[in-house]
Image 1 (cartoon, rainbow, N blue to C red):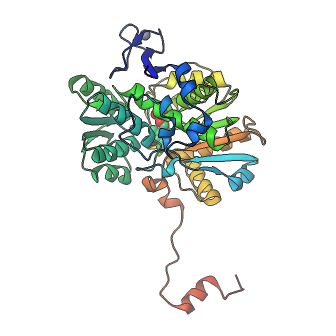
Image 2 (cartoon, rainbow, N blue to C red):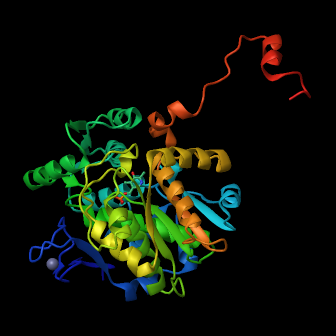
Image 3 (cartoon, rainbow, N blue to C red):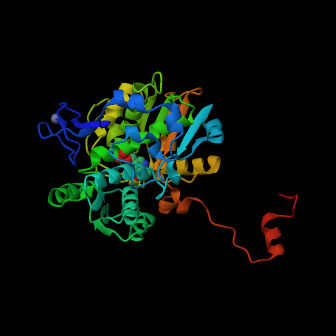
Length: 412
Ligand SMILES: *Cc1c(COP(=O)(O)O)cnc(C)c1O
Ligand SMILES: [Zn+2]
């Protein structure tokens, strides 16, 4: 019997076959993957996981594929760093950084979701990969499609960072830059998905794609020595990653790999695009769409598909949300780099800035085992910090000049 049982509507519970479907035809609710947990409990143990590949595929029983993995074999199992310096600075005893800056092959957490989505898309017979992206997703789809020999179309907003544009072109997909923001891109892609038989990883393949994010929960539990953290801080664009970290933790509990889960799930956004965090702070269970205006472009979704569920998750787990200014994003990037030697992109700055606020507010406490999710690489968003890191000391190749600049040895 297959471990993946059906797709199920998150609103009315109607079940569908495990095909390229994403909305309920009765109530327009989003579909998600339903598993046979009794069977998974039999198939998965700590020992079997530990004996698995050093990639996210060690958790394949809880991922929505029928055969073995075929695309994205090296995604996942990124370092969990005990951030002693940053922890000391913030007053936290046990702070960990989940470092997806170094995910393979395109240096963001999107390599997880794309590995799962395209492996499933191949199983469903698709030959063309596509996506609506805020940047990182397009890079990952383009790279994986090149490796897999699939046709590829990536759709991006017109204002992306140079490295994220180049990080598509190098793989030679069709790069379609839309004169508009991500929400415009997404709307167009939904229309195209109705016309072409393409695997739009975050449109018609979305239920499978989103499951890849659960591995950010699974790995953290395993890397903490099979315990769930007390607090997690998660950056939010559509809100999908946040909801799936919660789903992943609860699945581990369901199949007996964790005793109980009392993790508080906290959400982070940039003030220039914070529909979800603003709803949380206003005490609403629904968000109002906004027009994004922030340097955190990877999170710039004004009408977040999973915003409603992210609010529900945070309420259920008794976590919190907050948002930070662009200056605080830059501060966060620099703080993480200068304490832990990790250069994150703007989304990482959002996470660290928000973590800082939550500690200050007392929502996260000194003894809490806290994991901050750092989801993308700083070399892709250099524009954000180039004006706030100073310049090199430029001198001729002369010892005299060097000593004039830095003083005699022992003097400085
Ligand atoms: C896509 C992305 C996220 C979060 O995406 P969701 O849509 O909320 O799942 C977080 N960080 C980075 C760097 C991303 O590219
Ligand atoms: Zn429904």
